[in-house]
Length: 250
Image (tube, rainbow, N blue to C red; front, side, top):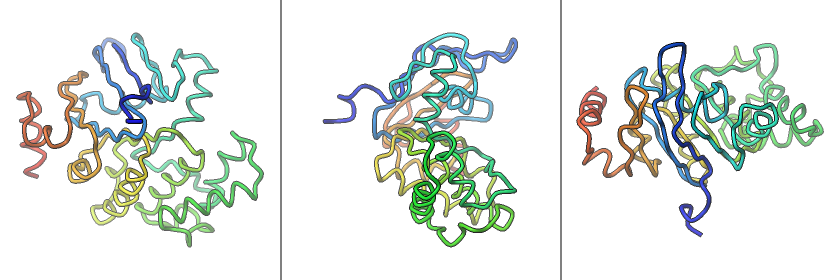
């Protein structure tokens, strides 16, 4: 069955979000289907991170509807608990516990949130450390790792919860240039496994390779949604053309 014939993994309809008097999201609607890889881009302050944080309820939207992984996000504690069990998120900062080893960072979630026995959690953690290509770092502390390695640990930690959907909020923006590719390589491999992914990023080379759908935001609105081929070669809005001209010439 084609992904578009299935119910959306994420459905966002008419969502608005305010910070005081500032409207960060203006009537935003978007659908992401199972196995689809969506890249969200746009200038700083366009609402990209706010949108992705609303999907797992790190930010509460004031109006509109969001349904993700079959859960209607009503703002209640039950929907919050259910959605956090189904959605993984990787941030700009790594947010690892500095006093815990890599292995302990990875096993904490499955053991506490899913009541998984330690032995099973450690087996799961080793599998995902293999997947992100740093199995030898299991016994180290975050301070002993490079930025790229820490971000790969953060990705593995999210995968240990075995989510249906992965969200990435500019996961390479805090990295030195030489470390960006090692993280993008892991994300590309994850994308090739048909994980449902929403990625906020300025890495347009990555977007060209893996995205099924590009979303361009500006001033809290979705201005343009298109397949990568159309988005990069035939954007329909002047705002998108200006953005691509600026980002692709730097």
